[in-house]
Length: 201
Image (tube, rainbow, N blue to C red):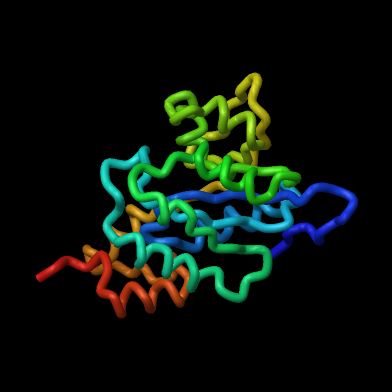
């Protein structure tokens, strides 16, 4: 990936990409690479949620399966890290709590929260969003709509669009449609071995 080479004369720059990753797909990896280049990030942390407050349930695969899919997808890829903190905090996973933990672990780092325009447009509905905004700079990608300007919040708009979703992949698997090209091969193999998302008989 094109993450910036560490420069000891400037603070570490960490990108945070949270989500249920149910499953992680190639779009997640492409967005992370684009964000790393745009923000000159030293690395991107993938943070699987235990349960997202923005979704009706905790996901269709269990937390253990979702974190394992992330681990397999990013294994060996420089600049990508798995950070499973939210899985150790059962209940709703609030972004502000994760950002605070990153600040505690990396007190001198610059933090960048990577998110889609669908959530950017409703940022005020997030739990304690103002505190989150004080901790991070947002890197926002179109999903699917363009990134709308926002006053008083640090952000950078990305051109790279995310056109696929985990929901789409799960539906394709159930319907017997071709889906393997949308996820990294280690994730596809894991889905098959664990028989995830297939209709239960």
